[in-house]
Structures are given as structure tokens and as C-alpha cells.
Amino acid sequence: MIVDYALHAPDKEPGGIPNPHIHIMCPIRPLDENGKWGAKQHRAYALDDSGNRIRDENGNYVFNAVPTTDWGKPDTLEEWRRVWAEMCNAKFEEKELACHIDNRSYERQGIDQIPTKHEGPTVRAMEAKGIKTEKGELNRWIRATNKLIRETKQRIVTLFTLLKEVKAELTKPKEPTLIDLLNTGFTERNAAAWMQWPATQTFLVPAN
Image (cartoon, rainbow, N blue to C red; front, side):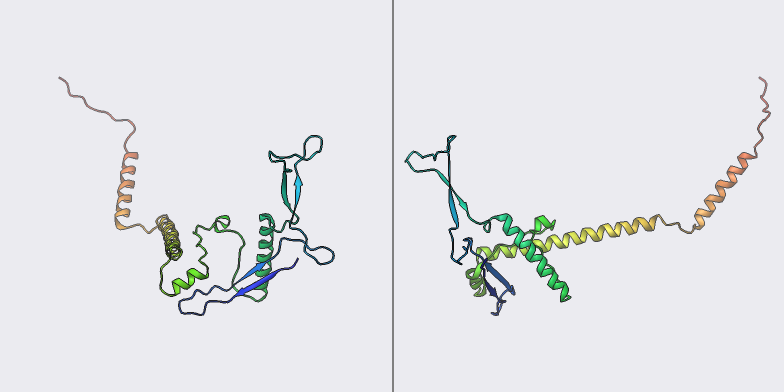
């Protein structure tokens, strides 16, 4: 396979977005044994029960265009992205860099975050000149919303941690106060007095 690539360095203009990245482009045409490009697809004709080609109402043979390679299939692209992420992360680890990439979407990673929209060079140039664009406004709203989501989730985590600490503190045994000691003594004294009361008593009933 022959690929081409383009490295995009971070924007150096004032207000530019530091977004170094690479575009990797590959053909979907195969190469033959002589190094020449082949057809990117071939015709698969529809056949009847007898194996004869079927014609449409205009007399043309009915066929499906079948790619000659799987390089343009989503599953293939997904596998390439996965392998690329593994290669990058292995190099990051080798260089002891505290970074990590993931080929999966935020949704598949379980990350509650709204993805921004690709702006492109035209929108970037307009934004750099102070011209507000629809995509620029949308991405600013998305970033602000994501920040609010992160802060809210952090507040919730902090609140649950505080509640857990309070609950643990309330369940700890505490030294009895003076009121507790007096109440306990009073209760025990009354209990002992009732226990000492005779089991049988003689009561005098006045005569009429």
C-alpha cells in the first residue's frame, strides 16, 4: 500500500489554536504485480436462476459495483485507527510522556462530553480576524457546556464524599456528656428500685 501524509503544525498566528496533527491519505485502488494501479471496483452482475445476466427496463445489465479492496470500509478504518493508537501510546510510554490517545469516540469511552465540530482553515481564518462564525459560536458553546458538566460532576463527587465523611463521623463512639451520665444513673436507679419491690404485697381495703 502506498500512502501520503501531510503534517499540520500548530497555528502560529495570534489567537491560533495549537492543534498539531497529521492527515494520512491512502488510495483505494490496488497495485498489480507490475506496480500499476488497478481498478478500484468491479462489476458483479445480477443473475437469474439459470445463471444468466438480468437486464433492466432499459435493456442494460443489472450489476453492483464491488470494491476491489477493503481499504475504504469503516471496519478497516476502525482497525487502522486502533493499531495507530496502540503504536502512539507505546511510543509515549517509551518516551515517558504523560499522554494517551484513544481511537474510540467519547460515547464509546463512556466519557460524558460533547465533541466539538471541525472548523477547517476558512473558519479558523475568519475567527482569527475577529469574525464570528456559526461553527465558532457552536464550538464555544460546546466548550462552555463541557466545562459546566465537568464542574457539576466534580461538585457532586465532592458532595457525596462530604456526606460519607459526615456519616462516618456520626457513627463514631463519643464520650458521654454530663447529661448522658445523669440520665443513665437515673434510669439504672429506678430500674434497681423496681427490682427490689416485694413480689407479694398486702393491701388494706377499707370497709364500707
